[in-house]
Image 1: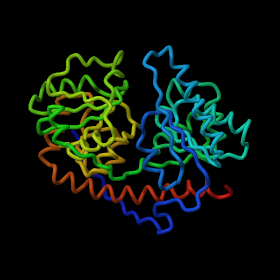
Image 2: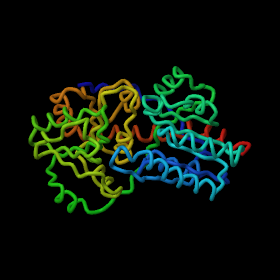
Image 3: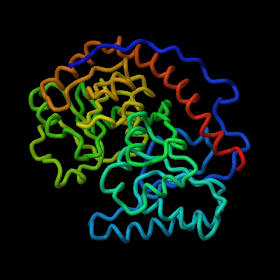
Image 4: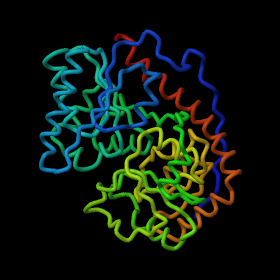
Length: 358
């Protein structure tokens, strides 16, 4: 378990002309083929785009092509109806990139295209799709979430000249009400630890369940759709102190973040940024994070770092986060202010690239 802190960087606050809303911004459209993604929401007021989450999902995998056809039709209708000057796409999936380039070729050759690339963009299966690298190189901007992913993109052939690094933006969450009712419905007992999950292969779900078995006095709340665990993780061994509330409405999820003993973010892979850590910063909550080099670089204070593959280490980390809550909270508040200043300094050049000559 690692707890050392990195030196505190000196960062100047953003100039006043960079502060918040995009003034006289061109018409922009942001397309994300997911139910919800906080990164796109937090950037919206600064860049001034209209954001659309297109969340249609069929459970049977053999219907996935029809799902993409329907999402493509909705996206095309939005583009044709609004005629944006700039189109942002959240990557993956690759078919969305094909769609916006078809629009550019056939409808509006002057439109600017921005690919906001999540980590999975540069891993199979998406990076294996035909011409994905070539199309990314033809975008006006390719935005990646951290420097490690930028290096990975460069190795794959993505031109560094128009690749921009922009960390997830930290903002306070709009907190929902009704913690008592929510806690009662979930059977929460203090201390409890919030673990937002996608149930992807990189998440150490088995280790979390084993940690819960070893520490029956701790409660672990795993949000997200547990149906996604099928074929990847065995949830049948979960003990009674593990709660699966499912994919929650934003207000209920925010309430859990604000009131958790600590927020836990775990991954087996380095280079994964974990949006949950930014959500914890926004709510001034202590963190228990995987001890990857990237997470320790991005969140050098306010967290206890643990081996994600060691259930005993996870238990020890959660107990430490509970015992040192006051210190960790103070560090989180300090780190949040620094990250806000960093974000504006990184975002300003991107806005200049897009808005100049629009």
